[in-house]
Length: 193
Image 1 (cartoon, helix red, strand yellow):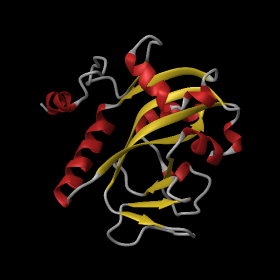
Image 2 (cartoon, rainbow, N blue to C red; image 1 turned 120 degrees about the vertical axis):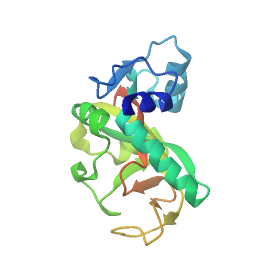
Image 3 (tube, rainbow, N blue to C red; image 1 turned 90 degrees about the vertical axis):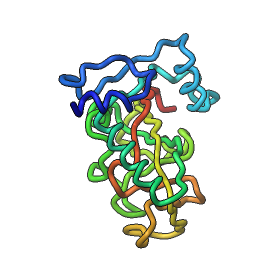
Image 4 (tube, helix red, strand yellow; image 1 turned 180 degrees about the horizontal axis):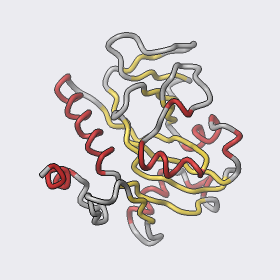
């Protein structure tokens, strides 16, 4: 029963999945598809034009359902935004993120507290990424819910009461502290220059 209800809210462009047995699916987007070109354009192709090695759609019904529930929760409180933001990582982290979502406990830097850090551009995500991620990297493009955003300049451990997001680095970085408020929509394998 629950599986049938979940299947109704999944994006129509997702490939079919057996929801009883498949927790997630990484769908390799064909180079000729409009979806591939839309994601390719999001990577600001000037810098990464010859560096992109593959673009994949993340399909995870459980994570998507949690994201939709959180969106409904935000909707009940008032206006909200869904931002497409970037998170750079080592390639070996892709499966874990596709299965379980981003996990702040695996982060290395916490200037603005224990959260998941997203950037407004792929160049910034690459720049702020750990150098231990190597040359062959993966860039997630995530849908991120924001409603009450706290602007900060210095160190913060958690946002003040009533805020769900911290925005820092002159508005170029968003930090999220609560699960379900972000969904990894796409992952782009690329070579970092």
